[in-house]
Image 1 (cartoon, helix red, strand yellow):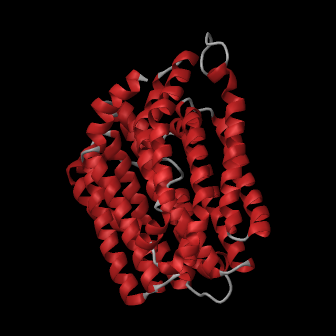
Image 2: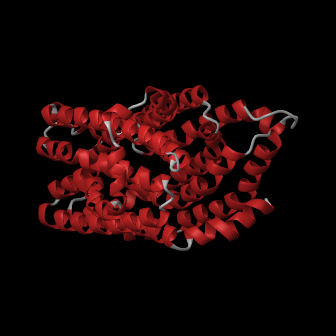
Image 3: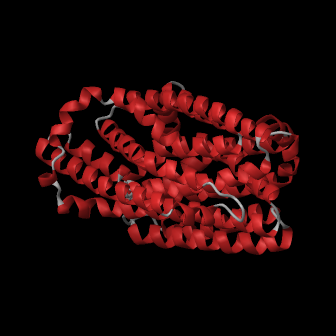
Length: 433
């Protein structure tokens, strides 16, 4: 625990209280302001449609870069001093991403009508929005490719500054579009938001123009494709399936209860996302790299319980404060129309607590590339999330969606504890597996 606290004092707080904190706070403030604009100018019904489009674009964006981002960052960092291997990594990632992105862009553009029918229930026709998204998709992929290079070369300051500027630019355009075009403007802003950041990224990579000479078709390496594939599949699985499950749940609420109730659930998930950003930032900065470097059960157990002792009490206190202030939070972030969201807080907050408890341990799957463990547990989570949500929605209405959230993460946590039970509670004399 002392090591974690020392790290937080010497490293994490230094990062989080500087540019990283500003980046996270700008993202949260941008989300709150956008949510407020949607509540005032569009309402709960529009928020439900926006949620479906956001989940869809998230899945397609993940497919367009084939989940290669984390793997690319790792190998670029490993080989940044080896020009030959660096050329192979960059070329492989670039051309794989190029082919996947162009394919997805064409599919989205020419099948926009069918996609519209799937993600926008009944009488809504936003085919043109999906075509706009298809046109700008390659810019998103280029942006993520550029980010992986900067991240691999440890240009963290550049990345954070670009994110901050990109968030401000995206917020400005979203607010203008929402004000002028209402629901259409909000949907267009979702379609173009991520791609807009590429305009800023161009400035950040201008000094890396020499790297373009390394991008050659002949440098594509099937060996690196094999090395990148575990990262790719693990990243793609959750990034694609989970948003699609959210679309299915939201569409079920729309069809069986109402657009408004679907908007209320979307509002609750947005609030959840805002406060979870702070915790997930800490876990990404500390837990993942720490798990990657330790190789004994004793150290693994120590890190897990140290994090629990140092962070979870603070997180629980924060959740309690959020619950007590839920009426103010709903009115501040949204409007009086969203008052029914207050009834969803208790289940969402409890579910998020269990989610954090389980995610801390589950980071071991990524740190040690425990491929099948990750795939099986994530598949279990998304299936049980959908099944429990639909079951409880039938019983309790929209409140059932957040009850399903809690129940599914309780079951997921139980599965994680079964897998790591011996490591966390057994004899500490063997290697982490």
